[in-house]
Amino acid sequence: MPVSRLTYEHFIVGTAGHVDHGKSALIKTLTGIDPDRLPEEKARGITIDLGFAHLELPSPASADSSFQLGIVDVPGHEDFVKNMVAGVSSLDVALLVVAADDGWMPQTEEHLQILTYLGVARAVVALTKIDLAQDEGSTVEAIRERLRETRFAHAPIVPTSVVSGRGLDELKTTLAHVLAGTRPSRDIGKPRLPVDRIFTLPGIGTVVTGTLVDGGLRRGQTVVIQPSGKTARIRSLQSHGRDVETGGPGTRTALNLTDIRLEDIHRGNVVTLQTLGGPSEILDVLLEISPRAARGVKHGARVHAHYGSGSVAARVALYSGDELAVGGRALAQLRLDASAFVFAGDRFTVRDWAEQHTLAGGIVLDADASRHGFRSAKRYRCLARRAQSPADVAEFASSQIERDVGVRRSVLLLKSRFSAADVADAEARLVAAGQIVGAGDFVVDAGQWRTVRAKAAEAIDVYHAAHPEHVGLSLTGLRTALGADLPIEQALEALIGDLCRSDFTRVGKAVRRTAHRPALPAALQAAGETLRATLAAHPFDPPSRKDLTPDAAAERALRFLIESGEAVEISSEVVVSADNFTRAVDAVRAYLREHGPATMSDVRQMLGGSRRVVVPLLERLDRDGVTLRSGATRSLR
Figure (tube, rainbow, N blue to C red):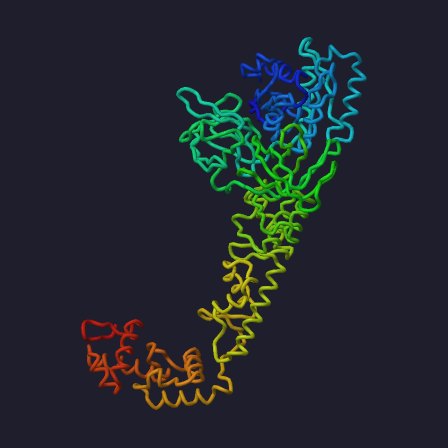
């Protein structure tokens, strides 16, 4: 019989709940791993910092599949909410722990709001210490009432006791059923590991741990530590205590890093790739306050913003109004006191300056925001569109292109939680819908492109009318005519290519209407006839250019003759008619074929011209590959 190979799906489960409600004891009983690792935690009997464990559960959907759970145990005490937030930023399922004897408590409520702000969609409630409940039924109902009108309103509630063992198997089964309906983390090719622990091991060196999101890392890979920008190499990886070659998204991962000192990396730093851009100092965000919150957020408020495993002091700048009220949502900027590495699409929470209360949460809409243009109509429209559809890659792409007019393809939504394939697919759909235009390495807003294309066509037509004798408008002249309307300087070549696909033609370093034929205007026709007659009367010894063009009209007429091919500019000072140039070349060919190598003097006497003309003529023939100079003589090449 064929042997089935067990497949694994990876998820992160994190605890939440009030202090002393039995979170750590529950995790220890479920996994056999004590998440409280610090001596102070043992002495005080409470969790102070993050603890970690792992658990394997069979999938209820398939005997050939298993769930590998990384479990993050967080502190419940109000003094350590900062540490709690660092542990729950990347959860698939929250394990909300409520003690049956205490019921719903202040940190239970605050943790619930934090989970909501961070976008955690699923939860299981563990009703601990059930053997101490006065009335189990009413206790369960009281919790259900607290969850009403939240996203966890229908979360399963499992009564448990670590003393008697009641409900522990049911809790595992319930977790497995909830996870069976949860999609594992996507690999979008943009790995980030928010660091939550750093330590050294003898003979090993620096080790960092975190929950790997958005992509994979491998042994031997060079990584960058953000926001410092310092580089390191991954010597080895572990996941759930096992050595692995690669770590994937949604796994608890430990990295042994070389070329980095312990003091060069801190909790809140992010291990990532150099190609994913740099840190941010200003974030455009959608800020929201729970209807269950105690107070609003004022414009200009000093706060602490918590993202990933880190936090940073910041100031709130609302796009409109002086205060965001309880239960409200608003566009805002977070102006950070220090750099942070975040992506558009990341969730965050905001706590007050004293770090006593969680005020709000939200989602990053633009990780590379700027104070320049703050509250501009284009910026506001872009952010409003993103806020309405925070998971829509096409809306994110088109809103940025509309705001910036044009964006280089390689950086479009680079710092976002959309994969390169997502962005490329959205771009193709937007092009097909006529919303954007591909312009070489750039994508440009279609409306702006039509505007600049029409302006370019008009500039060429105006130039033809003013200078009908010229072949067309120079590229430099076209760039000048477009000025600030050109979306991106590098888009000029793409614009010219677009023009030339219809009614225009590129001629050297100029662009013209395909139907345009250079012709001397009436005011220059007399000067043109004079030039033609003069050049014809002196076939191999024409007057100098200075003598040919005594005024501006003559200079414009001569330029026309050269551009139209009627005259040939042998040098900056010597111009002959095209017919006479052809005659001269034919005569030199025939003379050298008959007489062999000849000097400049021989050619001058043969043509009957002056040294002033014959020297640049022969140099021109050398460059054109007609003749070959050897010392003082020339022969046919």
